[in-house]
Image 1 (cartoon, rainbow, N blue to C red):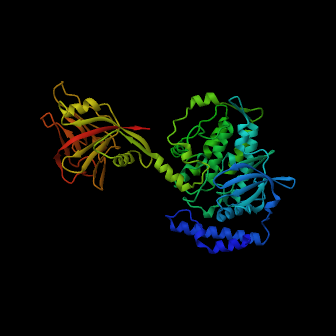
Image 2 (tube, one colour):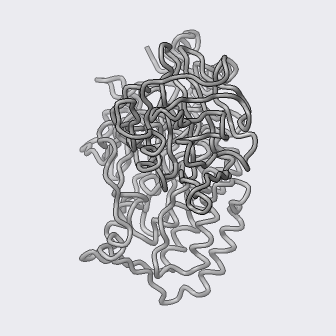
Image 3 (cartoon, rainbow, N blue to C red):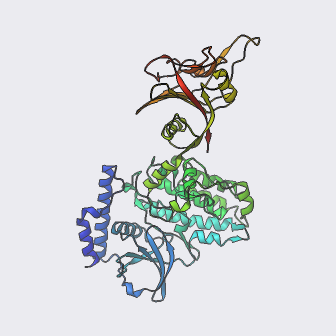
Amino acid sequence: MNEISELVILLNDQNILCVDNKNNDEHSINSHTQSSRNLEWYRQALEEGRIVKFEYSGFNNLREIGRGGYGVVYLADYGDQKVALKQFTQNSIENFANEIKQIYTVNNHENINRFHGITKDPNTNDFIMVLQFAKDGNLRDYLERQWNNDIFKISLTKIIHILEQIVQGLNHLHSNNIIHRDLHSRNILINGERILIADFGLARELNCISSSSNIIGVPAYFDAMCLLQRLKPDKKSDIYSLGVIMWELTSGKPPFNKESLAEIIFKIVHGDREVAIPSTPEDYVALYQKCWSAEPNQRPSLNEILGCLGEISKQADNKFITYNYRQISQRRPSTPSLIRDDSLSSNSSSDHSEYFSFYQTLSKQISIDTTNIITRSHAEKIANWIYGDYFRCEFRLLYMGSRDRDGPEFKNFHKNCDNSSRTVVVLKVRGTNEILGGYNPIMWKTAPRKFGMIPTSNYGETDKGFIFSFKGEKTIHSKVKNGNKAIYYKDEFGFSFGKHDLSLINDMTLSYKFNCRQKNYNKLIRSSTGSFDADDYQVFEVIDR
């Protein structure tokens, strides 16, 4: 059976056409339609002879030179020429057809890795692209060769020479309505003085992309807004990646090269970026920082980037950027790994939605000291109210109140909790499965007594506090309504949110009672109001990790 016959079968087989997001029917239909169109285009191109088909037996002396989620790249001899063979080990005709269509569309530019044709391994039936071989490797390899005894050195003229060609190639992609979506230093090839953009496995036409489209790539170069699926990838996403490459050209190292993949994802979506190398011209730093701006509309166009590079080149004569790895690495130490690198390899087959899902799991890491009142699930819910969707924090037990403790409990509370901020109080109502609590972002303190004898009171101001209740599946989250009276201070009270919204009050028996009624917070957190009893309560200090 020949390749065209196989394609006809595949086009009629609805089960083989994968979709990008099972939870989005409209996007699934669009993905299905686009896959069908790519396959149909590929079939016609083969029939019309627009794609050259090579006999596999004509390739000799295959040597592996690269590997990724798509498969393997080999260097091979074809007659007296050297070519690169990109073998798709996943045997996905849809991915193969998509990549060929994208590279075929832009194959007539000097800064695009040239596509020669296709072949097929008769032993494995794997699809293979025949590509131009870049004899000097990729940009990452080139930068590694610029190191000498922990010193990286590169001329500003060389940097601009490389970047101008990347921009020209990228501009050619964008002018053909194609975005790369996986631009990084290993996808930039060097062939003598010529710079080539390669690897179009993730490239898509702009009208075929959604915010949940699949991505297999290197997240250190991803646009954070796309990683979080808040925006769909577009031309500005490629410019973000270009900005990261601009920094890499001055450092000789990949971004966040000391961090695990998990830490990289967390840093990117929280706005962390690499620091500028000290010897880098200020206008060059300003340019790449604009490129990786969190706001896509603030990123420059490719023509603006070319213009800026032209201005920078006027001061480039005899200018070198030098980077002492030991000095810089001491100034910016790496953080401990949170997760093993091999748990999610950047070379493994993954997609954009999986990175997003992985980030959600990663970014909701929480540790909590032993507690007999709340569960880990409760703590995650509380942390979500404090931080929003993404957090890494610790609930450190500050104090546990008990009826068995000696002395007035409200005094014990102040002895252990005063001057502590960002605290969570939790308690379990006696005889029920009801858990109440509150979060105070400001400090607890004891109001002074007038003349050392007369009790006084005052309020702490904040609009960030809240109180809450958990009862079975029911949850109530009550926010501050009157920020001027969010926290109540009086030495005959222990903790007090809004004076009586949720309070521990001295009942003159050297014990304590609790009170709950809606006043300065926007919701009542109990079905009944007034005093109630609880055996124990706990106070946690919330600490960022």
